[in-house]
Amino acid sequence: MTTIEHWIGGKPAAGESERFAPVWNPATGEEQARVRLATESDVDAAVRAAKDAFTSWSLQSLSNRSRIMFRLRDLVERHELELAKLVAAEHGKVVDDARGEIVRGREVIEFACGITAALKGGFSTDVSSGVDSYDFRQPLGVCAGITPFNFPVMVPMWMHPIAIATGNTFVLKPSERDPSASLLIARLYADAGLPDGVFNVVNGDKTAVDALLDHEDVAAVSFVGSTPIAKYIHERALRSGKRVQALGGAKNHAVVMPDANLDWAAAQLTAAAFGSAGQRCMAVSVAVAVGDAADGLVDLLKAKAEAVVVGPGDDPEAEMGPVVTRAACDRVEAAVASGVAQGAEPVVDGRGLRVEGRPGGFFVGPTVLDHVTPDMDVYKDEVFGPVLAVVRVPTLEAALDLINANPYGNGTAVFTFDGGAVRTFERGVHVGMIGVNVPIPVPTAHYSFGGWKDSLFGSSHIHGHEGVRFYTRAKVVTSRWPRHTESQAAQLNFPTSS
Ligand code: NAD
Image 1 (cartoon, rainbow, N blue to C red):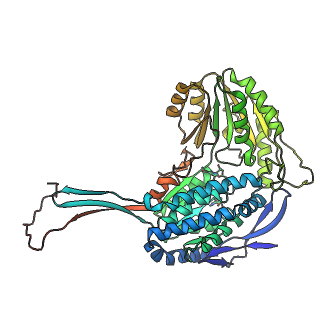
Image 2: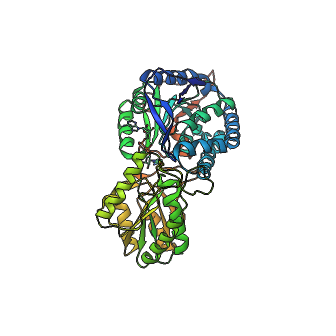
Image 3: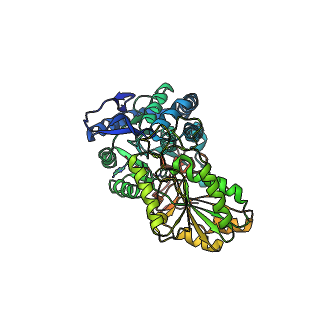
């Protein structure tokens, strides 16, 4: 059995722990490898390596840092298929879908290639007589990233390229369910010429996470995962004085107005609900059908959901793979059962799906539940599987009330040709990322990604310019250059501009 280790100080590191977690092949249900779970002292070794590398890395010129990012970008492009296959094998998503996350992650590296422009400060001459002011930003030190299973390449890339390009060093704690892609990224960083210790990977569970949260040499923590853990990370990291951004779970609503192109909307919703078996934080899990849109929309969703080809991630014909673990499969099926028991109508029921030749795989088929109401558990809970709940509402205002009453606020979308309805929606909705006839509005790398309410704890979104701000702190210099011969009496009043 293969053992997946850590990456510390520029090379693989076995660590001292004898605790392991299984890494499943979700398509077959077999354990394909085991990952070593770090101890506190393994984490300490990674943080020390990052701390040792910090001083010289932070003094590297911006052009040297950006050249390494350019090389990394090319390497990630060249290794795209290899990375995608690794992701598909451990996560379960189909290879083409995995390629998509690598391309979107690479866009953040492309943003980091331009770090020189992103770090430009301001300069004001003569803010007072003979006095100039300018500001610039400096890195924080060792930054940690703790990431979820569902985007093992893209989500860490929301963090480390920007943290590293701004002059920090980084310790990544990826999900223990699909850890291999992070180790390949570590090798690609080394091949790109990144000095040893600037990027480190520790595999592990709560023990490793807590060690990072409490470590005095970790300056900042970026977390992406479920809401209860995000909240915990935020509170614990703040208690130990760290800068922290913690992105949580989601319940994303897509509103379909009666004037929408229903066939187009149904196709977008099908892709957004069932792509990656619904295991995306931006997956659409609630279709909000407004007024007359409902019956036609549900008929189209039924036809399109039934047409989705489910199979193993390495089957080029498959459009949707299994969910990540047996426990996830059981949880999704239980959520559907509870929805049906509480009065939802199963228009398409994916429970009990068996894929030919893969009897042990963790498969759940696309599921559409109609007449879902906000009091049902299947509406309230984040199901994180291929389940689309249809809630029928009479008006756009009722749709907004529904979304705004939901504790999550990650993404949302509206399908319509009515510009006035769009304006009302985008101004009034309490959600961080909005799509207009776009079902999965994940911002491109130059914009920042982040939700509202229980979908994000902390004050800054991730990547883009908010990422640059998160991983740096500002200095403002006020300077004056008196002549050697100049003399002035001491003035004890608080200085004002003159
Ligand atoms: P998770 O919260 O279970 O795990 C995320 C990370 O936290 C992993 O590295 C894990 O090892 C660690 N962790 C888990 N339990 C812990 C504990 N008790 N103490 C300390 N650390 C712990 O999430 P997941 O199941 O890997 O990923 C799915 C979740 O992530 C969903 O809720 C999804 O919505 C969310 N997600 C959110 C975004 C976003 O941008 N808001 C993006 C992707 C995923």
